[in-house]
Amino acid sequence: MLINDNPKKLLEKLEIAKKQLKNAKTREEILALSNYIYDLDESIAAIDPTHTPTDKLSFLNDKNNEVLDKKFNVHMDKLMRNFLENKDFHRDFFERIYRKTDHEKRIKEDDDIEITTLSEEDYYNIFFEFMKQIGLEKCFDKFVKTKRIYTTVNSIEENTLGSTMFNPITKDSDILVDDLDYDVFSMFTLAHEFGHVYDLNRFDGSINNWNTFFYQSFNSEVVSKTFERLFVDFLLKNNIQVPEAKTLLHDMLDANYEFAKASYIITLIPDVYLLDDSYLGLSPTKVYKLVERYFSKNDRVRKFINKCSNLDVKDTFQYSYGDVVSMILKDRIKDDEYNLDSLKEFFEFRNKPFETEMLDKLKVTPDRYVKLYKKDIELLKKQSN
Ligand SMILES: [Zn+2]
Image 1 (cartoon, protein in one colour):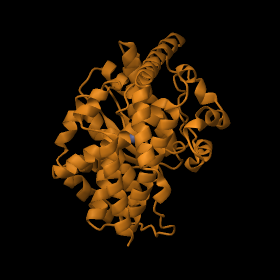
Image 2 (cartoon, helix red, strand yellow):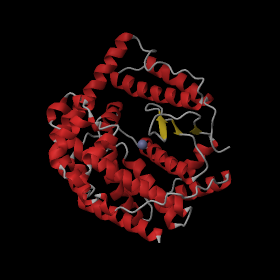
Image 3 (cartoon, rainbow, N blue to C red):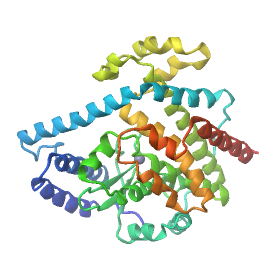
Image 4 (cartoon, rainbow, N blue to C red):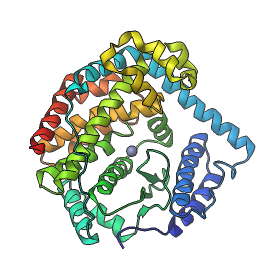
């Protein structure tokens, strides 16, 4: 079996992590480990519904809990302050992207594609070839041999297709794919998660940097999304499961567009609501009232806001910047014949809170993104004929 559905090893890791937590010396360590334990707990419960998750932090005493909340809030405050300082930049950046990728001319998706279920062997071989193209076939093999790819019985969380459980102290990692079937859709999730593994394994900062990266930067989805794009490219280039690959590309571009639009909308909400997160409690109607004057009827923004389940700054911007930066990085990696070295330049910045310098250095601009986005749309049209 390629995929592991027995959480025994994860339960052992949970015990180890709890011991590490007891011996943790700093608040930053406590925060990082608690987060890992929380992930493990949720994942184990998704693999084996009989597992009762330890209540988030019940193994900590009250004093530690308080410390943890404070530490967490310090990170969140810093994130928001940084966001507000750069709000004009974000607004301009995502407005340009949103306007130029507006979907009036969007191509229709094939509704009834047939999803091929692959044999275990074919599944392995296709993904192996993808990983080989980017020089990571050994990493994939290691995960298969040591049974570090898990599947679930129950869904993890709404809108969550997978997760990477990474111990920030020992750098041990496992991958979870929600309800994995042997098709290219779960491979897409797998590609995303291997992006996280690649990224996190190359983390060279302190545990303080780790939490900053995790809670304050908008860089945590960049490499995983780069891997997604490389994977879809790989399928189309090699004529593998083309109808499904087209659907993946279509859905990816659609999601990219929606994250850009959501990001732009958030930047239109007045600071006073953003400062204390009270905007998260606003009704869709109120949010619409705050931002409607920036849109025309054709933008169908009311419908969009109603549909958005989450306009959280951290989540939304981690994904939208992930989309934009990954588009440019993928292009470079392709130019470099799939050598991942150009990610090194990104790694120099990725532990830090948002700064425009990173975008300058990586030559990430809305125009460049839009150009590549349109190239993908053309590819999709071509593939449709
Ligand atoms: Zn991710």
